[in-house]
Image 1: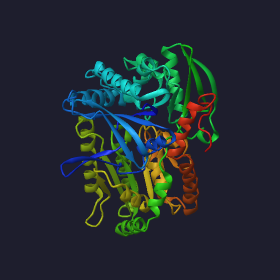
Image 2: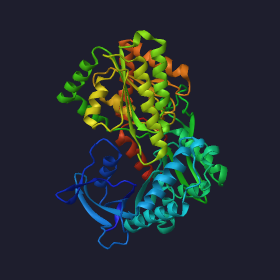
Image 3: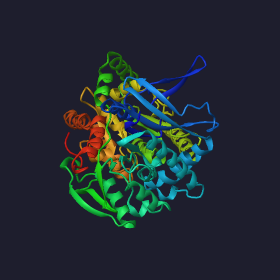
Image 4: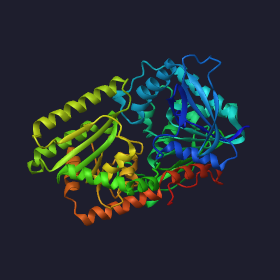
Amino acid sequence: MPSDLVIVYHRQPYEEVEEDGKIVLRENKSPNGIVPTLKSFFGRFEKGAWIAWKQAEDPANPDFERVIEVDDAFGKYTVSRLPLTAEQVSSFYHVTSKEAFWPILHSFKERYNYDPVDWPTFREVNWAFAEAAAAEAAEGAVVWVHDYNLWLVPGYLRTLRPDVKISFFHHTPFPAADTFNVLPWRKEILQSLLACDVVGFHIPRYVANFVSAARSLLDVEVTARQKVEPEFAAEVTALSERSVPTELVYEDRRVAVQASPVGVDADYIDAVARREETARRAEEIRAEMGGAKLLLSVGRTDYTKGGIDQLLSYERLLEAQPDLRGKIRLMHVSVPANRNMTVYENIQNELEQMAGRINGRFGSLDWQPIVLISRAIPFEDLVAYYRAADVAWITPLADGMNLVCKEFCAARVDGDGVLVLSEFAGAAVEMGAALLTNPFSHRSMDSAIAQALDMPTAERRDRMAALRDVVHRHDVRFWANHQMEALSGPTLGAAALPAA
């Protein structure tokens, strides 16, 4: 039976684990995330399908299950699994997506690596996704494509199935035209995205950048724009916009462009934070601190996350304020994004060397300035650390959104705690009540963390109340609903970041 909703995403909507020699499917470990939210939409349609890839030794093996039926808490739906060889995965994902696209999307031109890119393989994989979606989609179905590694899917799908409605969501930043146009395949990518009915981004700045890039290369007309809601147009962030395009026309096609900030499952995090065991663990963490204040930083090991800059700022803080030695501790969680890629391995090594140097310079027998953790922490344990921390220090150099800062605020059921947030994180546009800082400025970084440590209780609580309000109103369901409504609305994307 054809599907009324087809979700195209590189990840499978479950985890595969081996039990008694057999592979079984399990729900994702954390119910807080994009995948569960996307699956929840299957309940709104008569039939749903999910397209993903799965590594296979031999894609031609007749025993490979390309299509399976799943029946879980979200209902019954089909999963089409595209068999990709290890070489295809490496080329399509690790090389083209991570070495060529990732640095450009985050405006790190100096890290862009064009030489190893195998563009024919990228096209081939995207075509396979488009074919699978076309095969699953019912007449007039909604096809929702996700993220930059599937940039070419909309264009191929429009050729195969001109009847379907196509929505695309970009989960990373979209850079300025002069940066995006470094990519040799820029025109092909933009033409594919303009085959959509709706193209979604986190914040208005990314919408504006996309439109600018499209107009630099193609005959694109902006036919509608509107002012951004005041709470998303604060002057204090580097990523703010005052107005934003909402509709384009390209080759007689109308394309809605809109900003929808991805959120977290704030209600779920709130419930976890209120559990008795979470509160007990948070108290244990505070007791272990012995009266010292806990600074918490959580992210991936990636040059975009600003981990090195953060540790340098912490070192300067300890140099400038000797009285803080023994009274604060930084827990820096930096989980390697991909251990097989040299660029990430080098960053991890530098973080470890820097943490060792700082601990050697300032540490004592009874005080360690930095605890560096390079493994993923179970989510329930992480929520306990969110509750126990005095300051969350989240300062990426570039970040499409950043959900850690939202998780921290959702977990602060006590209404306390300080969020120090980079103004180059997409989340800063809607979280102006955070203590915003510029990670490219030593003075800004150093003064922000010092201010966070000295912030009066009343100010902490006022800021946190405002942050929690935003995180609950703009949660992950708000994001998904806003994107889906654009496909059914009379003007296809007539709103940019409305109030929830």
